[in-house]
Length: 347
Image (tube, rainbow, N blue to C red):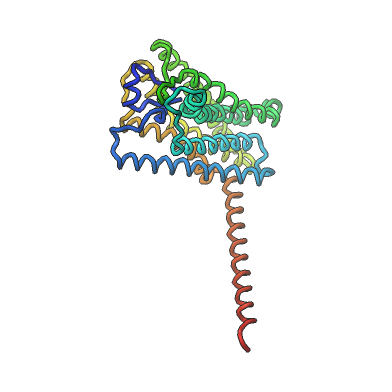
């Protein structure tokens, strides 16, 4: 994510300067926002974080408990995506409502809190991991659909599991620059680039590495997949297996589209900001694009629920079984109560 240039400490304290990637928790809340807007914002944050935890938690639960049905490489990568988004949702709520602040005195603990927690390093590292995993998924689907023989020979489960682990490592490593530029003084923590030139260079590099290049790879992959599937459809070679493969690919295309919608506005906004364009971090525009980014971590479970047939089938079975078990348990309890009442009634 692009980061901010700081001219004076006073500017940082009076304007909400984002952390790790436009975070607004390094300094006090915007005094320019009305109380009503702040309340709405907090409700939105709670709704987004809660939906992310419940939705991704459900996906993980279904995939893990029904792992025999979800044992394919694609499903392993979808599970990894849900684990990343689940972790991000938990961190998001903890950061937004945890209010951990360093003391006014410069201490080792204060430095740690500033650089790792207030900077939101871990949360934004998982956002990067999420992007990398989406790229991994798109490449796996591209090979499976467009080059099935190569996919069978190269894309083994062992490679997939290695890639899933590597995704997390890349996220944490890529974002490691961010804690190093955090400045902590008198209880205030904020990013401070060594120079404006470095900030602008890094702004372009970050835009390319975390958005434009992944976007290009995913676009190429899914366009190629769509063309390949369309050709097979015209050739009337569809069967049940091909339909299932098409369904999961369509689902992942929707996941990709949601990523583009949620991330494009803020990526371009912060690219322009890092190149020197004025930007108001207290504006409604900033709040809207920030909320859009946060929505990306909770929207995927809804896509699976409405579009992914295999997930819908197993989730519905688990839910219906739970309802039946509860119904039977309730009926048995009522029958037991009736029997007890009947036996204790005077003859």
